Amino acid sequence: MARINIQNVEVQNNPCMFSDPFQLQITFESTTQILEEDCIDWTLIYVASAKDEKSDIILDKFSMGPIDEGVMQFVLESEAPDPKKIPSKEDLMGITAIILSVSYKNQEFFRVGYYLYNVYVDQELLENDPEEVVIEKVQRQILANKPRITRFDIDWGDGLKQKEHEQFMQINQNYNENENSNSQQLNNNYSNNNNNNNNSVSFGMFSNNQTMQEVTNHFKNQENLQQSQQSQNFNQNQQQQFDIPQNKQNENSQAFKQDSNIF
Image 1 (cartoon, helix red, strand yellow):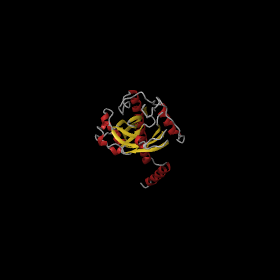
Image 2: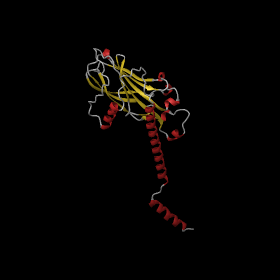
Image 3: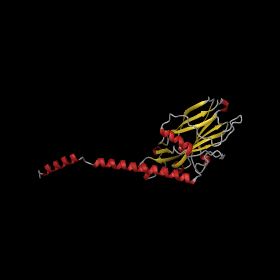
Image 4: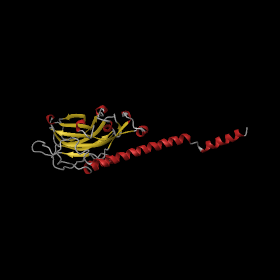
């Protein structure tokens, strides 16, 4: 069995502005004590371009150890990518992804990816797309309830290997219903691809046309909903500015009639 079981990854601070930090609350179980020299390596990657893996940006990378046996939880917080390192405007705006990779002795055993969508929150910028990106007006939306999960069989030492298709364990019953639902998505909606030994960290995130179409439709629907809400709020504000309460209208009408008698 695996020495480390990633039980849950909860995306926090979502949605938020592009420049805000990424926050992932991670829950994992260590089935045995992990020595300092056998530490666990965590890497958070931002896919700067779906067309070129070499453009991937490492947002954070650190080692954890020694680790006692038991269940642990921590928040991984990482700064947003430098927009200047993203190849083009087309790569910056729209759909891309972040990937969390976890390794033991240089062997990746867990990977989870989340699609995200960078879009303007300003109605005027949505309708009149500027040539240069106004980064302070860009919002980041992460599709947190549809993660892409991959587990790998590795050598844990002493002949211990991760069981093929090992199911996600859930022992923390204190999560609210929404988080439990998200955890179930981790287990059911995206099965573990243990037989996939592709070395590309961003493998599979953009290769499935059907998945990409579903993700695109989801974010487009969210964008249309946002635009509709903004337009509705604008119309309501305009109406409130020009609407005169009925009692006020009567007062104005009466005053006008009285003034008219002067002439």
